[in-house]
Amino acid sequence: MMGMKVAKHVDQLRDIIRFWRGQGLKIGFVPTMGYLHEGHQSLIRRAAEENDKVVVSVFVNQMQFGPNEDFDAYPRDFDRDCQKCEEAGADLVFHPDNEDMYEEDFITYVDMTGLTQGLCGKTRPIHFRGVCTIVTKLFNLVTPDRAYFGQKDAQQLAVITRMARDLNMNIEIIGCPIVREDDGLAKSSRNTYLSAEEREAALVLSKALRAAKEKIEAGEKSAEVIQNFLKEAIETEPLAKVDYASAVTWPALEEKEYMEGEMLVAVAVYIGKTRLIDNVIVDIAE
Image (cartoon, rainbow, N blue to C red; front, side, top):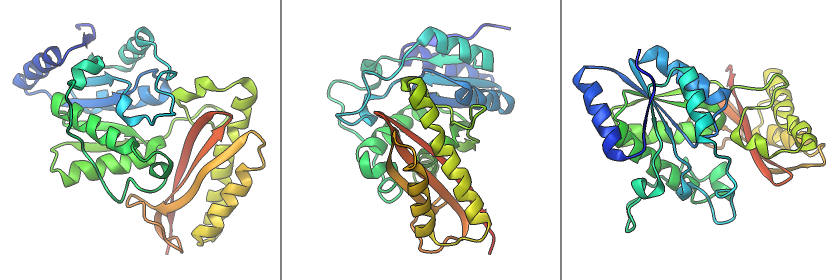
């Protein structure tokens, strides 16, 4: 078996993809911003099970960060990422420079309305324009049969799925379950920012969501009641500041007064200066 390859330039990537396509191989793709953890590895493993070859991109995309966000501080460790990719079964890592992905006079963007306005889009207005643009570029380069995204970024998963459908991209978008630490905290590259005290405080997200799910399963149908319940539960933690707590339809992300069918119950919370997200999808019987 040949070892995992690394392509740093678009031409290198295209040559490898062309060779695989010539052999009639199916390609799975996992786009990441690096600093990989078990959540990313679970996507790579699933891709390896379902495809002949797996490509992982490692690229911190400046376009999806707002002016006061953590682009410069975002954790990076490419050697460690390569090790985790290889462990999980990746065949190729694409690790371009900014100049490879964006020409100096770059002016073309992929925008979406509706799905990108609520939840994270409210306080991060340019975020999904950056996500949709880079993912479209990566899809055009890798030309995968299937692409894998984690449910932790549920809004992103909904946005990419709709984008692929609306733009007739011949790619199957596959959502994969949230991977959690033993104590319930959703795995995230940003967890490395947390102090020991903040790490403990961050457990309030998964605890509040679990309690909200139980409340819904016990019969609560009012979205407003659930949203207020989440906020109050999170605000019991002094280090936590709620960005949003929402219950919206899944995957359309529409606000409804009374919940029915599949609902996404999602929160974004600042623990100190670190913004964390988490969610649960609940299927509400008629």
